[in-house]
Length: 129
Image 1: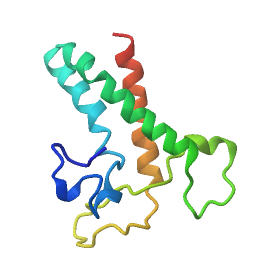
Image 2: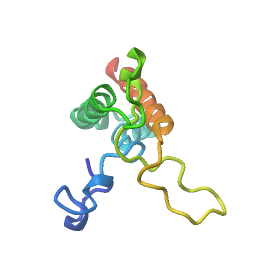
Image 3: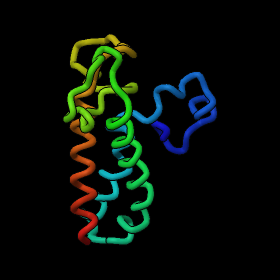
Image 4: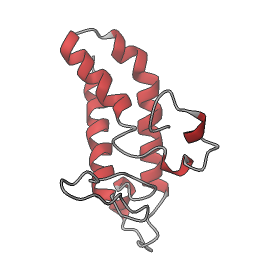
């Protein structure tokens, strides 16, 4: 799940930048963009064409939420299987007037979890089409 497509070799799965791939928001574009295209043009083919990629993305995000934890949380509560608090996420990194880049150690679980919930909700709507 690259942060860009097509993904250049310098940022692919074997690159030093690979740890940045698969972040919330960027990856959720595979669900959000086809939905918005459908809403604008009414062509259901884009939803059908992208459905397998949507399933793969949501499956990955849900699996990460369920099986991985932020190291700062030693004993997760039962409901935290729905909290996506592992991996790198850009989060709210474009704050006006702030020129610092996000810390790789920053906890952006609020943003990641919100995108997971939003994209899963969109997929539920798309599934009834």
